Amino acid sequence: MLSPREKEMIRVLQEGVPLVNRPYRVLAEKLRMSEEELLDVVKDFIRRGIIRRFGALVRHQDLGYGANALVVWQVPEERIEEVGLLMAAFDEVSHCYQRPPRLPDWPYNLFTMIHGRSPDDCREIAARLARASGIEDYLLLFSTAELKKSCMNYFLEE
Amino acid sequence: MRLDSLDRQLLNLIQSSFPITPEPYRELAETLGTSEEEVLARLERLIACGVIRRLGPVFDSRMLGYCGTLAALKVPLERIPEVAAVVNSFPGVTHNYLREGDYNMWFTLLEENPDRLEAVLEEIKKRTGITEVLNLPSKRVFKIRVNFDLGEE
Picture 1 (spheres, helix red, strand yellow):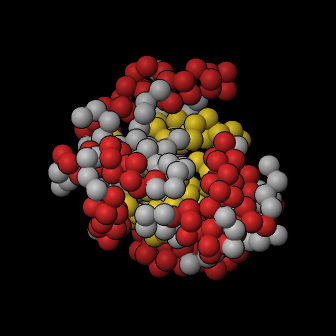
Picture 2 (cartoon, rainbow over the protein chains, first blue to last red):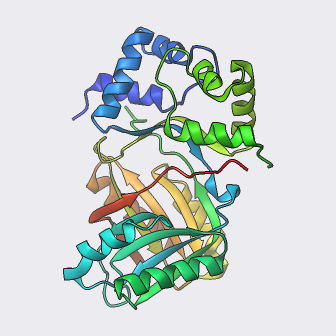
């Protein structure tokens, strides 16, 4: 469990690092602590896994990763572990999750996000994953529009 | 937007190793063989044009005690803008995409506890009248990659 003080630090840190010479000092002042203390807090949050990554979040779609597809797979439950690890090992797969099937109309239980240069490239990558895993029942769900993409703001109501 | 070689090197560097030291921009400049002013000016531009969405920490929502799900709705085509407005109005909805297929609206939802998560999904059903909803919380994460190598061309 996080303390109220830690939640306050998360609220301030999620505003991001300002573009000034001593950015951490600016954030530290808001939290009434020293720059050195704040740097220690950030390192501690990284060590504890509270901060997964520190740096720039980039809009990769605009940068030559032209196409991506959500590919959903129908994997026998007893093969989930093996197939999940196999697909996760592909460079073209950025995300791989097991999710519950919702029968009757949604039998898919493994979700991969794959990235390619073009939609055809994505189809080819999916076919390669299918060959490697032996899983033949899958769907490519290309996105046709982005309706919202935002960063989460945590602990706003306290 | 066209990125030159220095932009790409800078983006590669700050996606994976943004310095957690008193003068991070000066350190980045030294690594790249340029000036701190140049680094700050480029970052300002990359943020302004939306290439960089955020500069700072990416929190692990589970470690913060949040729970999340991926949900999909079957939305009649003519109702998409209206339903999207309802879905997007919840701050815990961070991504929402239209995709091909019967279930055509896919969104992620994060909330502080499972009850709140259920309540938001119920509220979306109530306010839109859409009853065909897939609630697909993750059971296991095999991979989440957040870095993208932009090369140097």
